[in-house]
Length: 201
Image 1 (cartoon, helix red, strand yellow):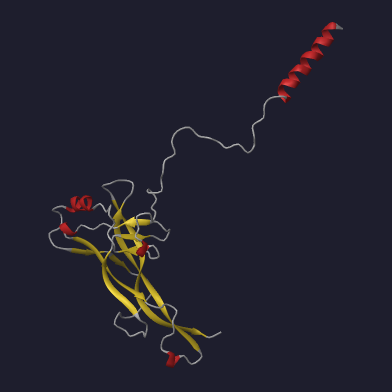
Image 2: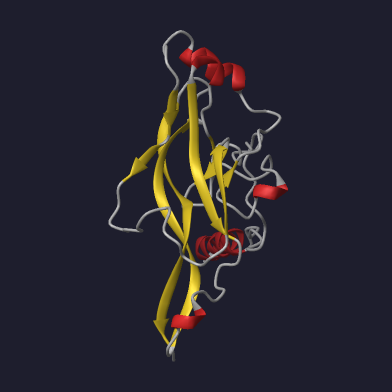
């Protein structure tokens, strides 16, 4: 009888230990040891992009922290005659001649770019080494009033509006994984402002 009572008491004590074990708060945060690394600069951000450029996908303003000396060292003594980049990437988007009249007001400039933004929204530093004959410049043309009417005398039941056209350009940009590495990057840049029509609703 005594043995049976002891057995029941031990079993109940064991059950109490299991059921009464402290439970973790389901809402408590998981804390990992060690410092948290800031990786925002590794993947690109607009903290060093001038306000003038933040609504664009290119910038012709040279940042204060632009690694000019690093880029000049990359090309030092390698290029004897000036090389003008970037490379135009051929697409099926035929846009006619730049000199064609489209009845759309636009601004045109021939820009030396210092930063470009890829399709994923990340900004990249464009390689420029003017002291070593390496420049990446491109003709930029932007619509003054995209969506405004054009060639109104030819509307005839159609909506005719000014439309911003883009072309793909391949740039050499800084590879953020290393101070001395570069990579190729394709970017869509505004190249002309054309007049397009669509059937009126």
